[in-house]
Structure formats: C-alpha cells, structure tokens
Image (cartoon, rainbow, N blue to C red):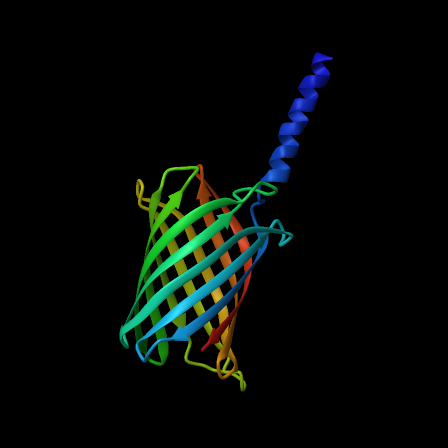
Length: 219
C-alpha cells in the first residue's frame, strides 16, 4: 500500500508539471484591437484590447485593456501616459490574476536612407494584490523598411524589445519581431507579425513562438 501511495504521488507530480506549465517553444496567438480618437493635430486618445492564447493557442491565458493619452511633441518625439488592466494566468488551467499597471512612454522617431527608425522607452509601475509591486523598464527598437507593396501598402519591419525588472535590475525577457504593416481602407490599418519571445524564470530561459494579428481603427 505504501509503495502504491508513493507511486501515485510521483505520478501526480509528473502529470501536474505537464498539465500546468507552458512548454518551451509553445505556439501562441496574440490578437490586438486598437482604437484611436484624434483630439487635435498633436494629440489623441488610444484604447487597446489584447487577448493571448497559449498552450498551442488552445487556452486564453492573458488579456489586457489599455487606455491612454498620446501627444506628438514634434515630428521626432511622441509622449504618452497609459493605464492598463491586466488579467493573466501564470500557468495552464489556473485562475486569472489581476494586475494594475501605469506606464509612461517616450518614442523617438527619425528617418535614415528611407528607413523609419523608432525607439520606444517605457517605464511601468505594476501593482499586484498577490505579490510585491514592481517597476519595469522596456525598450523597443523598430526598423521599418522603405518598401511598400500592392495597393494595401504592405510594409515590412523588424523590431526587438528588452525587459528590465528594476526591483533588483534583472534582464528577464526579450522579444524579436518580424512583421508586415498594411492599410485595409483609409481609417482601418492592419498588422501581422511573428515574434520569438524568450523569458527567464528561476534562472532558466524558455521560448514562445507568437503569431500576432493587429487591427487599428482611426477616428
């Protein structure tokens, strides 16, 4: 009887690890919808909703709802302040956990030989009920190529984003993007990207392969 109990306990631990953790190399789909409301020539309000499906895109494990004010200081600098409500599952088949996030953004933009270069700096304050609050810095550098194809003005780009946890200064995430931007109609734009996300947890790096469709409506 004792051997049987030990065997069942070990089996439960093994199965628990398989069922409740996302596999290294997991395929995911992140669907994003954005609405922009112009206030005047230099400023706008932005609303964003994003749903992420993991475990080979079978389970909704993350969702956020973001609202912010964006101001174009000049043609080279854009500033923004946003509030984001996040609900996320750290593992498969567990309950959503809530996060309240305030983030400040400064985006520098310039052109070089027809290439559009953007450098986004983001500072986040993350409030949790179940763990210590934290600060995080994110930097995303994007290169948009000068070519446009077809009547949809399809434009390729590449980007890389790093994440630094400022509670101890820890580089714990990297995202590399390859994508296409396109115009569907005058006020409706789209984007499709592949992203390789690398995340460090407990000293171990794991990866996720992400397909990301994005739709933006401009009012």
